[in-house]
Image (cartoon, rainbow over all chains, first blue to last red; front, side, top):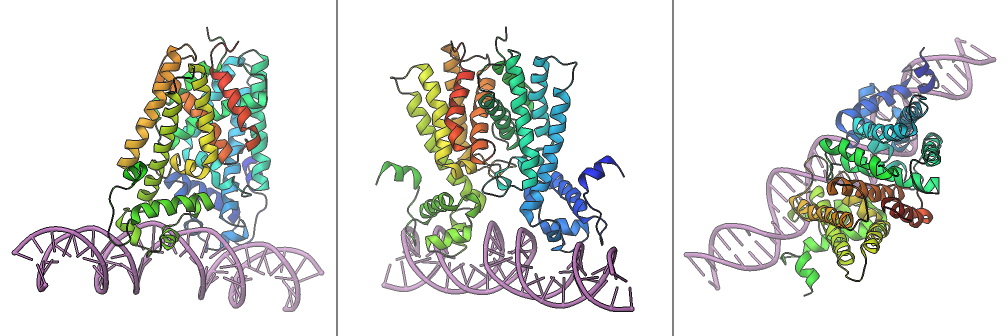
Length: 206
Length: 206
DNA sequence: CAACACATCTTGACAGTGTCAAAATACCAG
DNA sequence: CTGGTATTTTGACACTGTCAAGATGTGTTG
C-alpha cells in the first residue's frame, strides 16, 4: 500500500472495495476528459459500475464530491508551491519568478480542475466543506508568508503583506482565469504576460 | 421613446408587444434576485407570462440569451469607463485610480451579472455570440488604450501596452473574482486592496 | 375583402439532471 | 447462526434545456 493510498483512502469499504476513492478517480477523469459541466453523478456512478444513488453513501451530495476533488487539487498545488519555495538553491527573485510561472503552469495544465477549485459553486454561500477549508486556507496563508519574505528581501513593495498578497494573487488568478475561460488571453501570450507581471511587481527592475 | 429603448429594443413585435426585451428585463431581475444558477428558461418564461418555449423564437437557446444579457453589461461598463476616462477635470493619476475603483465597484454592485459577463460558459468553445464579441472586444481594446496613455504619462511601467493591460486587467479581474466568489477577500477589505493595487502599479509612488 | 405567407406562441414530448424514500443486499460482531 | 449495520439498488419526483408539430395572430398581396 503506497503512501498516496494512505492519504487519499481513509477506510477500505465493504462491497465495492473502496467506492469513495474510486469515485474521486473517475470524477477527475471525467472532468479532464470533457470539463466540469460534463460531470454528473449519474455518469460518474455508471463509470464506477454502481447505481445512481450509490455515491450518496460516501458524499452527502454533488457539492460534497466537488469539494473533495477541489481539496485534492489544493493539496497538490500546495505541495508544488512549497517545494519550489523551500528550494535552497534559488534566490528570492528566482523564487518569485518560479511562483508566478508555476501558478500559471498549474492553471494551464489543469484548467478544468482549476475552474472547480476557484469556481464560485463550491465557495459561495456555505457550500464549502470543512475539509476543503482546512486544506485551502493554509494554502492561502502560505502565499502571504511567501509575499512577506519577498518584501523583507526588498524584492517587492507594499507594507501590509496580506494586502500585497491579495493583489499579487489576484493578478495571477485573474490572468489564469482570463486565459482558461478563453477571454482575451490565449495560449501563445501566457508566457509573455507572466514575464510582464513579474517585471511589474518587482521593485527597481533596473 | 427613450434613447435606451432605441439601443436595447431592435424591433417591436407582434403578440406580446415586445417579448424579447421583456425577457431580458425579467432575466436580469431573476439573476439579481437569486443568482445566475437560479435563471432557467422556464422560470423566465413564466415570469414573462408566456409558455416555456416562447423564448426560443427570440433567442436560439439559453446560451444566446445569456450572451445578450452579458452584452448589455459590457455596454454599461464601457460607458462608465469612457465617462471617467474622458473627464477633462481628472489627472492621469486620478483616472487610473478611478478606473481601478470603478472596476471594483461595478463588480461589487453587480456580482451576478459580472459572474455571467466573465463566466466561462458564454466564452468557452464557440459559445460567444457575434453580438457579444462585437460589444466586448472594443471594451477590451479601450483598456489597452487607457493603459497606453498612462504609460505615456509616465504613470505606470512596462513597454508593451497590451501585455501591461493584460496584467492590470488580470489583477482587477482576479481581485473582483476572489471577492465575488467568496474566496479569501471579503467586502470589508475590498477598498484597501484596491488602494494597495493602485500603489503597487503606479511608478515611483514617493 | 379574401387568401396566403409568415411570425409568434402553445402543447406535448424526450432525455437528462440531483436527490429522497424504501427495499434489498452484503458484511461483521455476538 | 443471528441480528444489526453499512452499503447498494430500485422507484420516484421535480426540475432542467430543447425539439417537433400544431394553433393563433399579423401583415401583405392578389
